[in-house]
Amino acid sequence: MYANASLQDHPRLEASISHLHDLVSFDTTSAYSNLEIIAHLQRYFSGLGMGTTVLYDESGKKANLIAEIGPTNVPGIVLSGHTDVVPADTQSWTSDPFHMVQRDGRLYGRGTCDMKGFAACVMAAAPALIEGPMARPFYFCFSHDEEVGCLGAPAIAKYLAALEVPPALAIIGEPSEMKLINGQKGKIAMRVTVRGEGGHSSFAPQHVNAVEYASRIIAMISERSRRYEQEGPFDYDFSVPHATALTTLVQGGVATNVTPDTCSFVFELRSIDQQAARVDMRDLIDEVEAALLPEMRRQSGEAGIEWDEQFSYPVMGDATDSEMFKKLEPILPELGGKVSYGSEGGVFEVEGGIPSVILGPGSIRQAHKPDEFIEIAQLHQCLDFFDSLGNWMKH
Image (cartoon, rainbow, N blue to C red; front, top):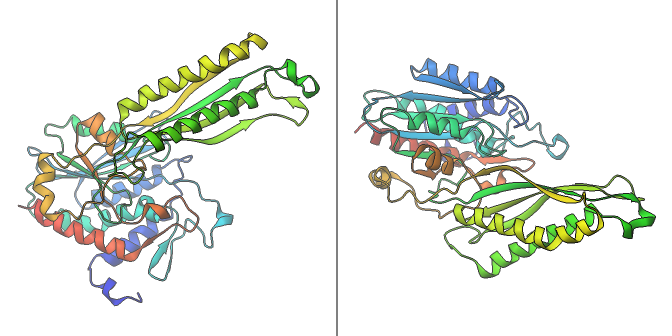
């Protein structure tokens, strides 16, 4: 079936590709329910004899799944991935994003890389991982809404932390090209709404132009990001070795001849230090309001600036000093440094007290793009690692 014969030598590779085909067929864009894919995963792991727990969100339209097996009186290992994907603009794809296709040793489809490829490998490897006597337990965890702020993971982390003996290490299967990642930035996403005073644009000097004031705030955010780049603090283990601040969405104005009275935008702050991020955000808010609010309110007493945190997730620290990591180290792949993208690793650490690392198939450079793909060779590497992990867990 494959052009490269060397890719055929893993007995569970075909199974992982088949599972990935099934998983991609579920449109689990974060705006939609993920209950169908959770039910699919639950049926599969229950059929293997694993105990399963479904954790619903308040709406009842989203859920997490935890499948567990093994002794409960010793600390175990978490294999964790999210079920949701980012939207796919079908016009930008050369094939249906929710029907996986193979071309030139690659598997194309939304989520193949981020991160249903990891889930497919867990499914394919599970029968061997849980076969026979186990010295430690496994916890396979699948969350909702990671892409919009790690919303599902806290419930999983708290569930695991409340066990008689909580897990000792979480492996987060975000795409890392099967290199071990021992650090991840945290993020705060903030929506800013500028309220001014509008009217006919011919009287513009008498108004408080919300778009113009929003643009001045955006410029201040951009200047702060330039200072991070120039002044640090730096940690060169990260792919981008300093904090970043970036405006990502802007909305304002109603017509070309109307001074806009409202403008909103969203920006993010990614930090290598969660405590510093909170301090920096507070400093930015104080700086903006001190510089602009008095000027705005001299024109209109109703003018103002509103700050609404959309979501945040914490930094994932370095787990290499943890007891379980040291035990596993002989079978772990090479270190790949720290990453600037987000994962649920920090949530497991902060909410569950579970040291975490990132290790998964695929490249983050392929995530969130049209024609997202994963190399078949990456699935092969992931399955090889699971073979080593399964053997280790039996001793």
